[in-house]
Length: 346
Ligand code: ADP
Ligand code: MG
Image 1 (cartoon, rainbow, N blue to C red):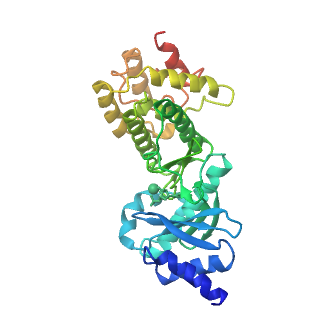
Image 2: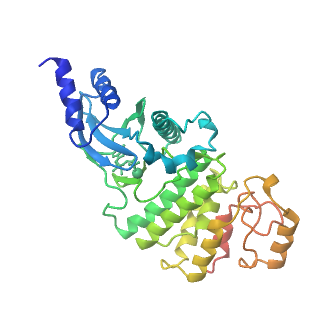
Image 3: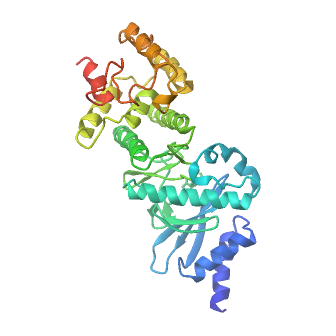
């Protein structure tokens, strides 16, 4: 057989489990021919929106090849992520092929931002239409397990939780991104570390719904870790930790200590009142800029009258975001989580 036949064979093998359309096959054959990888092996995952394959280079390095599906149905519910992101103004709803290309591009760029910030996520290597080639997270061609399936001791879970909260903060502060689909399904456990994947739907902080997505992410990871027996923060505490402008390189260690202290003060089984407060916080409107605050004076007065009673002050959630004290009597002198830890008994 000629070299071209051989490459075609290899591409054929990849189509064995899922039918790939001719365009996708062409892209894969070009990638094989260019030497980007020399083998396209088994399917690691078949998802609703994409399939992921394992590939190997000539010198034996593993790669992950994510192929987005071009069927229009799968992309209908994705619109909420893209509309509103300034980077995707030219997004074309009527052409599914263009749409998936945008998704792949989005994932590539988000991964690049994350890697630049030092977040553990697959290094994006190559992008062609709706086919994304990236670093393979795993060992000897076997993909690392998802957090959902990984065997992790309770003690390690506690450590992972703290690390993950820090990663969400880093993603927000340094990459200006909210993951928007963060859960035990999109985190891999590799060499005892968490790797963040699946960022095609992640949004820039300018997205009008960025805070909604951040709260959803916080809710999902809190739920997972709580079920795993970890003492977690509330969604509001997690949100505040992520957005707090008073956390910096000089006090982040103290902030992490405080985070652990606050989380540990909370029982792993959620108190019903906390659960109710979470629901209210989850649906509350959070202004993103001071101009978006309806009536600052009224809020200030209500906080004063509440005198530190969190329930009486319910509904006002932008203090930490604005770098203010919880009662808004001035700028906060320390990260909110440090102050909260100091108020705890013991
Ligand atoms: P989707 O959830 O949209 O189908 P993901 O990006 O979450 O796509 O990938 C699906 C699955 O493929 C993941 O759960 C993981 O098991 C595997 N996977 C994705 N990217 C990689 C990678 N870089 N290395 C190893 N496995 C991966
Ligand atoms: Mg996924």
